[in-house]
Length: 207
Image (cartoon, one colour):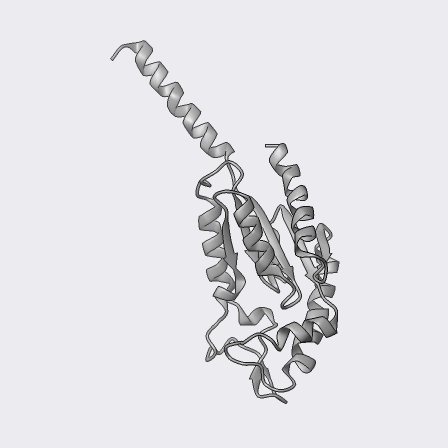
């Protein structure tokens, strides 16, 4: 092989490596009220941006018999609205593995959705874009009772735990995540999706 061929081959390798390093995931976090539409929005975004991945916080809930859970004495039931209910180390490891691998497309999204992802210091700092879906108490309860949970909600869980913890977690987000964009979960899903897509396009256009 000639010197020119060696140089050309080396330049091609450098160009491929440079392109690979410049292509990165666009990281998006979707949080908010239980039953606020997080999963629906995440799925719609994944369909819109080719090669995107959705990671659900619920997949990292600790087992029901985990000693890490915080018990609600008056209900004799675990508090699934607290940070302790999630195995964050496992979730972070999974996210870092994805982030450090090349995305299949130039503008692929890594979408993470969950009701307390913005309440975790390390997780919330991963996202370039953050969206939070709110609901009023009445609508939240109406939607919640229509879903089946495992383990199921015990009587009083919504009033004693779900709603008060949502307000506390929202307060924490408002204090520690100044770059979050809020949407009313009662709004039309298509309107929310359009606004989020337009916002993400600002990153796409700059890359």
